[in-house]
Image (cartoon, rainbow over all chains, first blue to last red; front, side, top):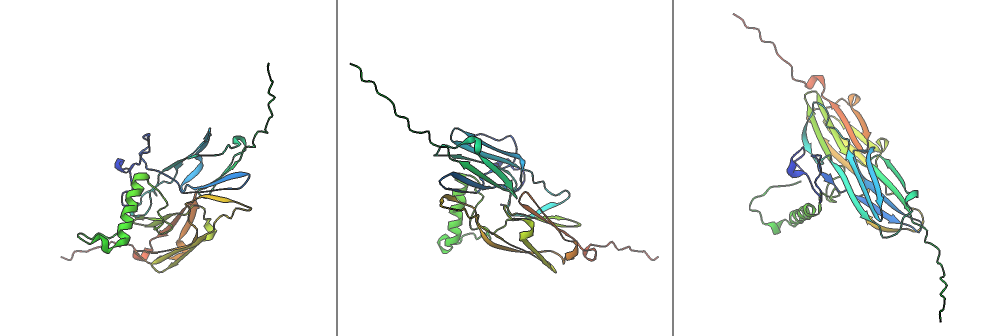
Length: 132
Length: 147
């Protein structure tokens, strides 16, 4: 963790390259579900609501956030245990989600998502016509 | 704590071996942030002639849930993270976030006046300003030449 600032070798690339010269991290996540919904909470320290995007396309949920943490002006880093960076993580959902009713809330660097399960379409009986 | 020991028997330090393997796995699968062995919270220390700034990533912890104490030249950062208890019948898919009490003790290069310490939390990042006391600052000494 000694390497902190913009060393391009430190930039972690997952598939596509990023245009910003900062590392991209996988945020830690808790995921649980009950009979009505799926709940996710992700740790995104340094990210504010404007720098965060959550998208659901088909069954792929993508969370990406940019850290707004700025190094203090006039100070130099003497001891480092973490790095500022961006976050991105993709989840494939196994169940249909009601996309219009997703609730998202970001507080103190933790994003909490509630993804209500889509109501299954009622079973429909199909009349079979016997021909001949 | 990472120790560099050239020629050391790797099997003599099973923990070091485990950590090395974990590092390699982490590198292969991306910079995972939840290395469980790491101390919480991770801390960065910034230094300037007029003081120090200590920043720490504490996602999900509010400022009033953080207990900061300064005694002479030690800063103690304490708090607790409680798991979100989902109501009703639930099943877990992933548990990567960690919970429970945490505590870090940081040794400062000088004794700090507790009245001048400022702390804030923004987007889950704690920032503690520790100004250097006037008595500790280097003073220029005028030399008068006697002829």
